[in-house]
Length: 537
Image 1 (cartoon, rainbow, N blue to C red):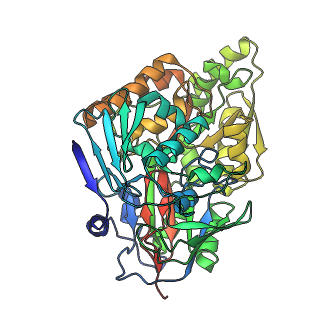
Image 2: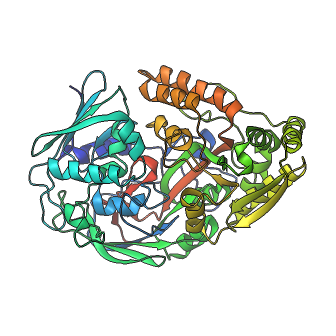
């Protein structure tokens, strides 16, 4: 067996080691924007600002500004990502394992240990003895299997990835769960750090209505959709009562408003997505946090479904050639971001020198004219919110495409939650700005989610058997070099099939006040608060 990681008391030691490796280097809090944060220049991901402030202090309430406030706390209904409710749910359920930002590997969170066999076709999770849910019921191997079966049956996010890779789940004893795979996958634990790894109690489904009952560090105190979510510390949490008394989540309305709320003290922490100017301002002002400058986070999602303009590959190609990523960067990011059409940015460990689609308005017009000759009227609805960065992108795309013969109308969603619903559930759009970052820890997951034919989380509806084969090759690649080569082949095919268009990497910053400590980051920027605490200002 390989890759054994034991949690228990070694977890604090591991966190201490990780802290020594964290990237710091925030600019002075003087607000001098001429001294840009070194991390934004290098494009490296990691923690920013001071992270180690001594012994934890108990008590206090932390207020977190959510990006897309969840309407449900059921992992089968809400995507487990930092932007869409993953942080909120992780506080209630924990995850079996989590990603370790320093090493790029996966380590136990709720679990005691994680092991795998030599060819990465079998993984074993061992639970601590006496683990319980917040209602007192035992969290044993059978409870884990029941929860995962429920998640898959409920078609939760990444459930199709689970079905495609997992042959069976065995429970040889009360504390052991064995996952046998259909083929090798070195990053399989990524699924155990997302929705499938959020273990809900069987009692959650009692009575016909879902009740959030987990084994995480917090329990539900109040949930008012669209208003606030309040979680209370759990005294009998397996790692001991969390230092914080409560964590309160509130909706926000865009990057600028989030940052203003952070500066004014209305919130202590927030998730800022794809607004380079606001992120730079937060870093220059000396805020701590975690920065994820991920590739493919600035994309143009095109609805490929029948009856939509994007069902014609020539229309998708015309859009790709017709919008200059540099124009998007200039208008939406004040030139602070990176313009590129590659799946992975230069800063990524998966960068492979394979070029994306170049800007070519003449070629775009030729392709559009061909589609029009076959009956397309050139009309296109672009869905966005009124948030400044999103609106600037929409106006740039509209002007660029109208210049080559499209007739683009901008359609405004009420807010981010409304946009997410219309894109991912109702598919009520022709085009919008989105993100499908190729994660550093497990690049297969979002390539599958955003392009695979049977993915339930593919907003574009793109389906192509050849692309499915290429994406599976990313999953099974035995070495990092093989992963890079497989991603290169995905890029080459995407340049022709155009499932969506790429305008460049875009940063995500989870920012917090400098008196917030002990926050731990997981895959997809889910944040854990089991060791978070607040020091006096």
